Length: 191
Ligand code: HEM
Image 1: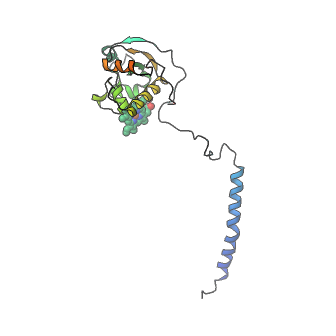
Image 2: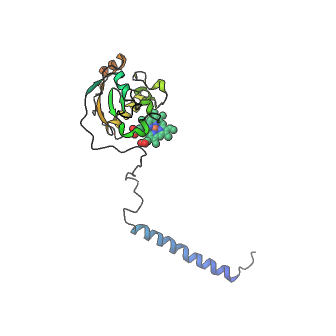
Image 3: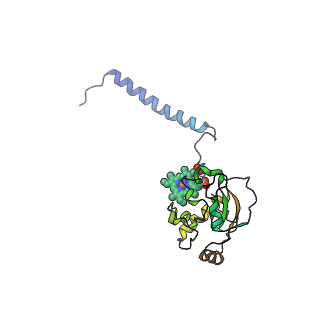
């Protein structure tokens, strides 16, 4: 048999028995009266996704179609501060000068500057030997990654031209493929 509890403990038990339901009801009331903007989004609503990547731009210039050889493109690798910085993806040349902080000389993505590094982009590789135009050996998943990058750049950087001397194997792929590699055509992705 348990010893009789002292009156103070009884009082505590009564208080708890009264307070718990009251607290529950109060919380339900508060939840039902919270304005929609402050309440947690319903599961059907999309939560806003915060990206560390820059947002798409709506002030891009009409794409240019100026021809560049790979040798000419090299001039725009960020080593000359008085020249713009260009990155080519699948032969489309983008002016990335606005992001000299990542594409400039010695910066993390300078590996892609002044060249067509499509293969490396598709492989998510920063190795210099992968930053080459011939992306013919990529898997389907890697091709998708590469196309997503093309779409990403198309929405953020001005197209200044196209590479006219891509390796024959890449040009052959372009002709065989149904996709259109022309600038701004690859914008179907939601990147
Ligand atoms: C630990 C691994 C990595 C981290 C933490 C990282 C981080 C980031 C961050 C923070 C940005 C946004 C930069 C900015 O807008 O200022 C970015 C952009 C980017 N990253 Fe990475 N990254 C990583 C690996 C890679 C790899 C392996 C590749 C190779 C393809 C890559 C390619 C890029 C490219 C092309 C951009 C776009 C820059 C732009 O034009 O806005 N990253 N990354």
